[in-house]
Image (cartoon, rainbow, N blue to C red; front, side, top):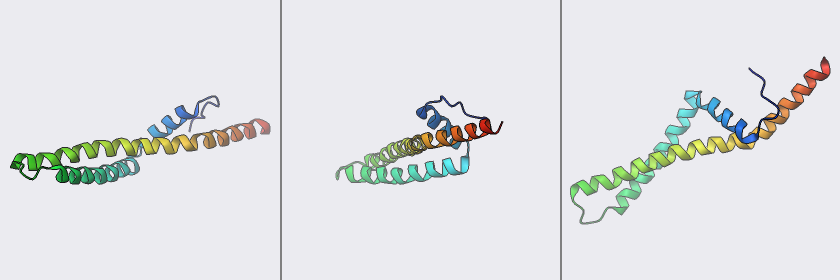
Length: 109
């Protein structure tokens, strides 16, 4: 594992950690699928509730379908933003620990 630069900003570090997490497909896509599914179902249900009573059959299909698609897209975005926010929260602590480790290595030399 390459050492991180000590002058790296927390948002940049959080972004790199998010990219690294995105390369672990089981966890990342598992979370994305769960978030997209939940919000997709919610969007479909809202679309169903918003369907007019005197709707023609194609409208009865399109309202929930469009609601589901919008819910899935929003779900993917929200989960990604939560992952980034979590990494943004953790970044200063990780940087602090890495700086301590670097100082410890320097003091041993």
